[in-house]
Image (cartoon, rainbow, N blue to C red; front, side):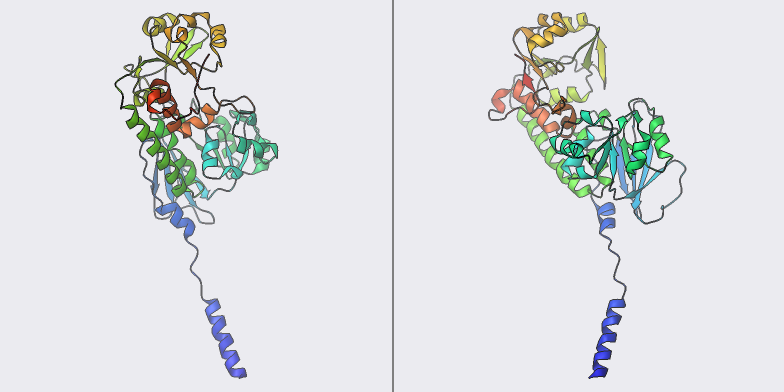
Length: 379
């Protein structure tokens, strides 16, 4: 009996001593998840044998070089040496982001609790993330162009997701020298509204949430494209004015801008659609009045909440037919507790809602039961 017991014990120990295969789930998630980029032109993701390669093609306007990020599993050696690539161990558990447009991406993937710091937290409007700020889980980091390095180092983030409008990355470079990797999110330069939303895949890659991001994007894409198709079911194409004055300059979205794309997909006639510019045009009041005085709609008139408030900023606005006919719309319908517009934070992530809002304005008969999410009519 004692012999049988010993043999049984030895067999059990042998089975227990057998090396169990290492859990390769993170590798499966990281390297085999679908990485098809459909609309975004500013970044690429490629799955390699032992790592993931992300290239940001246009990190800022007129960028001369791409930025390369190499993602490899925590605890593994860097797959190769490179003087220019930035190596990042994933998945990330502690992150700092610097743009409010990153907040919805984190929240949609249930990653908001990974966020440990943000520059000027009052800019954040989301109630979900504001609750974390109020509990002290997310720390104040100063200004995005001048992060409080001391606090950043105390927080020990594993990644900082930044952005640059000019190519000046000195503040980020200083932090990166401490060993904290910094990546640049260039989503704001995408021309197609869905291209902006697709940057959720960029963010997801650092957390191993690629499939979740893919599912989220596909739902948004479906809603957007269905709305575009719906808008074609009308023969009316109302003329549209957009933008507003700042000091002596009227900033008008260019014909290749994402705003122009929204207006086109909503089946409207944007009066500057033929001007082949990606960003904003800088025009005089007189030139805008000459071209758009009789425009039927004025969509995107700034942050004013009423026609009187708008007129106070420039009394000449009252010369436009859209103003006279009370056909002026602003993205001020929803505001955060600190006064920020939800439109600027959530809009890039939800282009389908923006498009539906514009269709509701231009063709209300097509979306009878739809309630606008961002835009409201000024009275």
